[in-house]
Image (cartoon, rainbow, N blue to C red; front, top):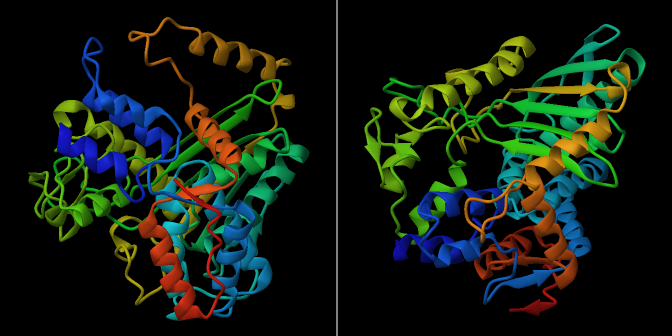
Length: 405
């Protein structure tokens, strides 16, 4: 256990709170045993990490995107989503993905300017062409449209084609929650996942996010991939020379593997649940549902037709789905009942006194509080090094590191 613990304690991009909690459960299955991995649940900067103010990271990401021709408005929208990912502890989708966005624009497989277009519309639904723009631009447009329809018709359901990687799915759900409605979103992604019993990958990590407000500023916000882990976790293990749990991925042909190189070189990820015997067919089913609502319903690329991960030779043409539901159109007292439910779950007696019962969104709130307390976002030194190299290449001012732990 010690090598795995050390790898994930200090890994460059793995400090996401939901992942941290899942790892605790994975490695500390016996609640009676004291284990240092539990410390991963504590949202606290690690030794050597460097803190960058949120506003400066927003400035940096925006300038990086405008330097390659992206409009100020579009660049800012992308930066806001990416920085929020880091603030919430989902480091795999923040600064970590910036260079990918830059390269997609540089290689002209993603448009720097333009606006999404409504192709078909009814009172409660719409079909949108993202026009191959940055994912956050398409996502914001579609969720805002869904929110408007929900307020008018009770429900708004918008599906887009021609989109790109849109960052953390939770961002768009939070956008709906800010308007007092329930938010749901999902997106298909590059085919990295081996369907149960398959010998090759055919669907993506295909995340789903759902959120709603309770009372007094509390909320429930689930943001999850339909695979056991995101591909970024495998990438980090490879860079560190570490193996991964066998429930994470497979080698080429579908053979279980703990070797990150095998998984990333012709292999792929396992659906949520892992193998068939441990319920992986359920994660496979969830991933396929995302394809139904995104790629297939939206007329976008779907499953194995989507470009491979990090392939910048052709357009992604991702399909994405955005749903807003106005609870006022249903039984009164929704927010109060949801809060009672949240409180009931948190109030359950824990199986281990050191591991309190959480609801979706709690670990992210803890990470947000830590960011506020330290005055910025803590990053691993390797991330800052990579950011400085990107700044030099794009002739952009480096990020401002205000402290180091």
